[in-house]
Amino acid sequence: NISVGDINKVILDLLESKQSQYEELLRYFTLKEQMILISIAKKAGVEKYNGVEYLAEMRMNNRTISNIYHKLFDCGHIDMFKGKYRVGDPFLEMYLSSYR
Image 1 (tube, rainbow, N blue to C red):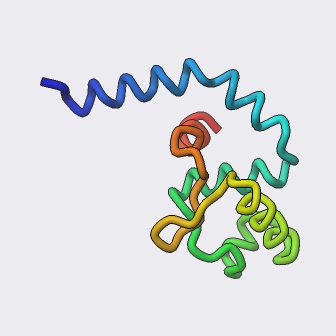
Image 2 (image 1 turned 60 degrees about the horizontal axis):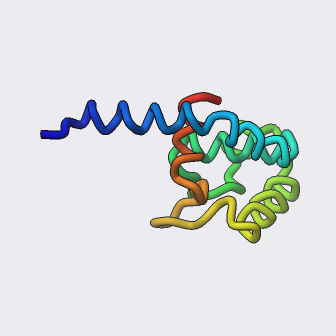
Image 3 (image 1 turned 120 degrees about the vertical axis):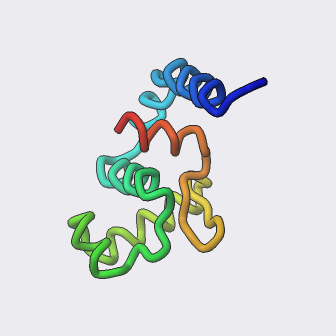
């Protein structure tokens, strides 16, 4: 039988093996884009990126955040899933939430 622990171990091994690829990919994003991707990953999705709390947490203005979300969405780096913006690659999302 395969346990949940076995599955988690395989996922962690996969993320560690892809670490250099993910870090290389992240170099193509601006610091603000990285901050937003990491925030989305750590929150397991963001419903409203223009909420007062989120704006204060990100320390960016509404226009900046809106432009970044639209850019990341248009390029496929984030998607809408069950009413939340999520990182488009679920393994990248796991990597960001675990290692960043």
